[in-house]
Image 1 (tube, rainbow, N blue to C red):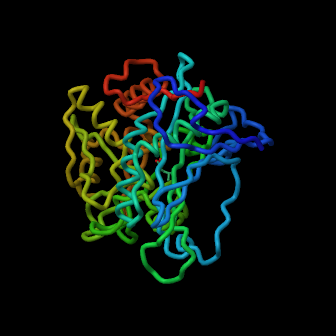
Image 2: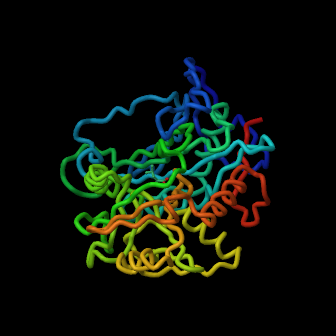
Image 3: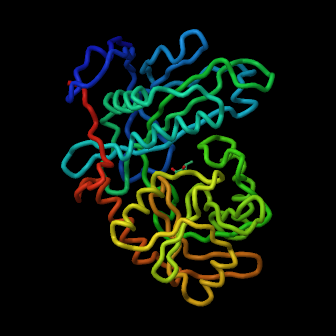
Length: 375
Ligand code: COI
């Protein structure tokens, strides 16, 4: 292992501050998967970023180390009570050869909002952004270049205190890992089949639904396995009180086009404030399309589908970007949306966002930020 120091590096905009990130480089580089064989989240780069928190030092000891297992006491709070948050964002090798993050600041801000829901001490957003740049900079050869691929960043915070009482832990670890990724679903962007459930609930208003926290994903697993038994890929979550109003799809935000209007559930405290959701809504507004963030019931959706007014339906998320929904089931009813094919409007949105991400078209909203490379 070799040791050097983050302060040894000069960043291209000269902006970096006095924070010192210790860097321990691996001596054993792993083989890179080829762009063609990339799936989601199964291979990881050579290094990871870690930082710890305790009451006397706050967040301290930022470091980049070879990718390695975490050593946790079996009594560590996160293993028992799931006091943890994460986020997920992507960095792209753009067609001009420049490496750019998509909406890194928004993801860092959301990580901190998630921390607040879980009583986890927030991290200076600038420090989070620096961890992104420093780690990606070191492992930048891992960024794939094929269209549809990216390097996925997974910043995570866990309660690291070994204590079995239920309380807000006194110590935490922030870590960041990187994974070169292709499509989230094996089907790629082919339309998926979904099943609306009034039996299972992902989250309720007043709970943790708006936080990106492990518990929400754990709560989704039973229902999504159940949906698979019925030949569906995912669950359409309805609200946790009346079991009527749409919340999310699988691990994504949900949107639809009914006549000429784009409708998506409002940020009601039970659903995630998706970065892709926000980006897609912004693009719709740029196109002059009417966007309604409003409650929509499953009955309204099924009625619109039967009358032919529901033209398209899709999910949005960082992992999938946009995912078309070809079939929707609810109780004994089943509708095929847009002949089971990806809709033209959704495809246009997908093409627009991907063109911004890969630098083909002008990034009018300044969503992309250039990787600050080490000189
Ligand atoms: C995303 O769409 O990025 C997600 O949050 C899904 C992820 C948990 C795999």
